[in-house]
Image (cartoon, rainbow, N blue to C red; front, side, top):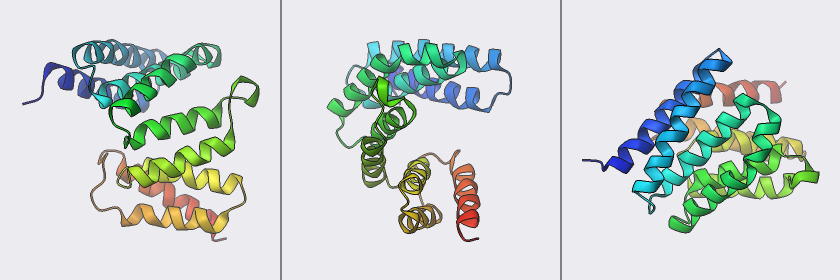
Length: 187
């Protein structure tokens, strides 16, 4: 069975997902706070787990987003550190590239954001984790930003071709989002 560290990062992931579905800010913050605590323990118990570092960074990011922009800005370095740790352990961890891409995309240029570097991270995420469908949506939106509509359409069509989604709980939503975006692009 899973080790205690594995159990805790999986619990953290579930708490992040639950928080993402909550309507009330206070409930989101409560779930993300629990997720952060569980992933801190997971990292301490299993330093060699890329997923523990990854989900700890995700939990910090979601918590920061729920708290507000200023709080999120303070978390940029610690989140980057968790993603770097995940990639040192597993260089093929597409999720870490996705998170780094999201950070580079969202952060203002003056604070280190860079949309071109973000695009490269999204491309790497899709290449390394082709079954993680959320990667495709970020990549498609980045392609659209850079007026690469044909590339965006190709990427969005790829979502429907994924047969063994890495995150089955997210797949239906990702597929619906891809279909909606494709519909707007074909008008």
